[in-house]
Image (tube, rainbow, N blue to C red):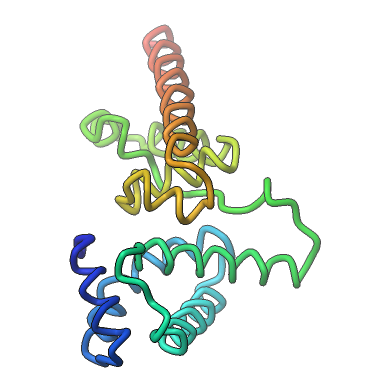
Length: 190
C-alpha cells in the first residue's frame, strides 16, 4: 500500500496529465476502494461502476488537484458520496442504515481470533462492528481496515480530527467491553 508521499507525488503528476501516475494510483487504490464501496452498495458490479465513475471524474478534474490535500481521502470521499447518492436515488434510506461491515476488528488480538477454531469470535466481532453507531463504525473501519490516519478520516467524514478520535475511542471501548463479556460467558460455560 502506498504512503502519503506517494499520493502527493501522484497528485502532482496526475495534475500534469501523467497517465502512468494515474495508472499507478489506480493499481494501488482499486482494491481498497472496492472494499469500501461494497460496504455501502453490497453489489460488486455496482461498486465497479462507482469506481469507474470516480476514476473518470478524478481524471476530468486533474487540473484542480491540490497535492497539499490528501488524494487518498478525496478518493474515499468521492466513493462514499457516489455510493450514498446511488442508494438514495434507488430508495429512501436513512444514513444510519449505510455502511455495515463484514470484517473483524484488527484491534482485537489476532491470536485470540485465530485460536477460536469454531469461528464464533470472528462472527461476533463482525456483528459487534456492524452494530456500532454509523459514524463510529465508519471512523473505526477507515482507521483499522484502510489504514487512514485521523486527519484523512476527518476529510472523508467531513468532521474534525478530534471528532474522529472520539468516534474511534468510543468504538474501541464498546468492542473491548463486548469482548470481555463474551470471554466471560465462554469461560462460565466451560
